[in-house]
Image (cartoon, rainbow, N blue to C red):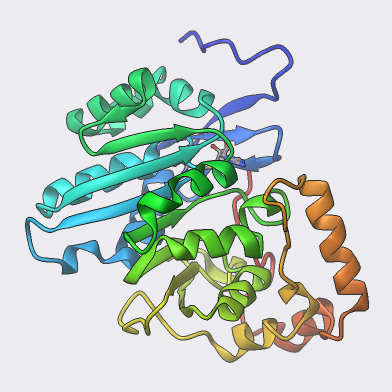
Length: 312
Ligand SMILES: C[S@@+](CC[C@H](N)C(=O)[O-])C[C@H]1O[C@@H](n2cnc3c(N)ncnc32)[C@H](O)[C@@H]1O
């Protein structure tokens, strides 16, 4: 096939096929894959949709969903199908800075064939005109987009899907200031769901006053991963499968320097500035070292990466 032009000054996006055969991309700018190597569709279902538990609502209910980092639209397509299957009336807002991932996905026959006809039509409409029956795309930096949307979304959302690249490479979407904006979109029983288990993110949500649960490592990840993600809400979460309380190891992680939050007071700082100010705080802080934490818990579970395990 002929790929749309992604050459020139823009950093490359390269196609990848994930473990379940579904389409993904690798980003040169972030040096990260868009999805788990195990499978993009599998991740959408097990990491985002299962913990969201939208289907607990009666048929015909309206569910409001904010999706951060739409990328290829894989999570969007799965969400659209899920809501249709469960007769839920989806109202959706999708935030994304780069139009290329969705364009590239829609140009790929493999991606189109993994989508239902209804989801594909919706994604094409989002790509072409920026909206579909369920909602609208807001193109641009999610930090400014969310500030503009806040009057409309404040205390409204049943679900926020947070699928930014890892905090270490995209700290601007995991800062305390940005996560507070995200949390303000939740209705009292709404949930933020993410693949991310980073101590900095969990500690930030704790400081903001959110309740949290962990997700188990995905089946088959063996010793490579100790957590499958995090769910946060203003109210206590029912600890039913797949949600579980943080383990002693996870709680101990929050006492280390890795739990130092990312700060972005202007909501416009560069990744370098945000990382540098956090490193300075870590150097001054009193938390225990993360390597000591790793040594303490070695053998308990794989400790390869406290964030996303997404080899490219
Ligand atoms: C891990 S990928 C998202 C994968 C996506 N959910 C999917 O199913 O393909 C992260 C996405 O974040 C986007 N992104 C990076 N920085 C952003 C920002 N400041 N605001 C909005 N989107 C951003 C990237 O363009 C990329 O598409």
